[in-house]
Structure formats: structure tokens, C-alpha cells
Image 1 (spheres, rainbow, N blue to C red):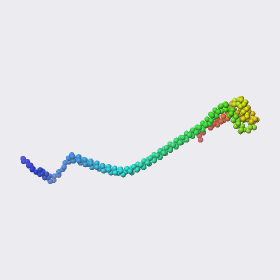
Image 2 (image 1 turned 90 degrees about the vertical axis):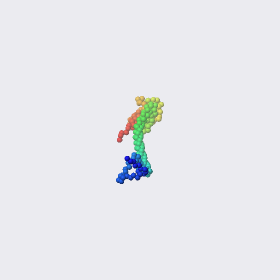
Image 3 (image 1 turned 120 degrees about the vertical axis):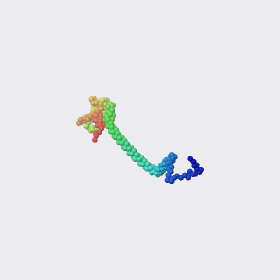
Image 4 (image 1 turned 120 degrees about the horizontal axis):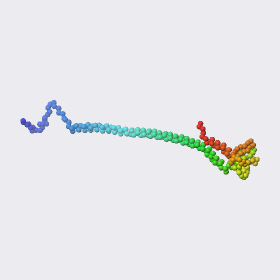
Length: 227
């Protein structure tokens, strides 16, 4: 066996493939990694360009969105303020109606209470024995002014109110004309007073008048009948 050695290394470089033969390069692992990196980089560059476009669009939309938001906020605020104002007015109106109803009820109660209170006060006053003689004199004075003196024959009073002759004499001098007799009746209760007339007699005693007045006050204190 003989070994042929080439003295010139360039001889190998001049070796050409046979005609009709296609050489296919076998990709290495490094080539595959570089290709994947290139694809990822291209994808990222595309996303970056798309993001830049979106950011530019947003820059143009921000003033419009701000103005739109401001107008919508103002509209919402105005509607909310109107709603709150309407709510406050409604609450105020309801409170006023309630206050008016309570005031009317209170006034109605006071109107019914006033006659009862007046009755109690008068009852206390009329119940005081020391005031009865003076009130009898006033009652006689009022009645004698409204009645013709010629119609009165006599005045009868209670001995309990005029136990002393001096008190009876003052009554005659203050109230009764000379032709009208003033008589003291032992059987008459305190506060009673009677005018003896030509055609009869008139009871004008405190208790008689107070009974009629009490009835009127009680009628005034009754609630009105519903209409």
C-alpha cells in the first residue's frame, strides 16, 4: 500500500464537488438559538412600535378625555346638587307641615285648656269667703244698672257675707237707692243674692251665675265636632 502525501496544502482547497451534487449546510445549535433570538427580537420590535403608536394616540386623546371628563363631572355634580336641593326642600317642606300640624294641635289644646284654666281660677276666687261680699256688691251694681230701679222692691243677701250691721249699711249706701230695702237672709248660703222684683224675683248670686258660666266654659273646652 502506498501513501500519497501532498506537499502543498492548497491542493485540498482546489478540490471541487462533483457536478450535480448539492451540499446542504447542517444548522448547528448556535444557529438555531440565533434564529430564535432574531424572531423574538423582531416580535418585540413590532410590539414596541405598536406601543409607541398607541402612546402617541393617547397623547392626542388625553386633552379630549380630560375635557369630556370635566364636562361629565360638572353635569353629574349639578344633577347631584339639584337632587340634594330637591331632597332638602322636600325634607324642609315635610318638617314645616309637621310643625304646622303640631302647632295647630297645640293651639287647639290651649284653646280648650284656657276655659278650663279660667274656670279653675274663678272657682278658687269664688271659693274664698273673704272676697264674696265685694263680688256680691259688684254683681248688684251691674244688675241694678240694667234694671229699672222702679222694678226692684228689695235686695236679699246672705247673712254669711254680711254678718255685721256696718257691712250691710255700706252695701245700702253704695248700691241701693233709698226706696229699695236691703234684707239679710239667714237661710241663704254664702254668695247668694236675690233681687225681689215687682213681677217676680231674679237670682243673681255668685253660685247661680257661676253655674251658668261654668257650663259655658266647659262647652268652650270641648273639641269641635268633625266637619
